[in-house]
Image 1 (cartoon, rainbow, N blue to C red):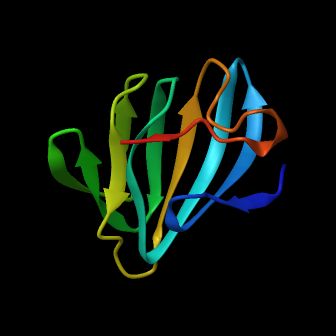
Image 2 (cartoon, rainbow, N blue to C red):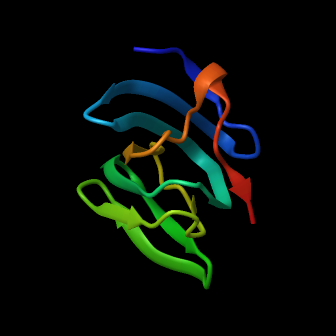
Length: 114
């Protein structure tokens, strides 16, 4: 387990690396009510399993559908995405990514804001 760190450029958002296994990186992402993850990209593909709360997806085409606990969001490498309109109690998901992952050595994040 690793320490929780603030995500620069993302209001009310923290990330914690849970583990790395089978060439996958597992992250726990928490967003406080009123927080936001603006539209951004990563070099790797990712699958996000929503574990708590609700939010609206941001896509390269604008505001997307509402997602909530139990939903799964899949995005390709360099596909613009984000989350906004975080519901009461916050929003949490587990991110599974391959390749080098989103949190790189030294805690550097692979995030490019749109």
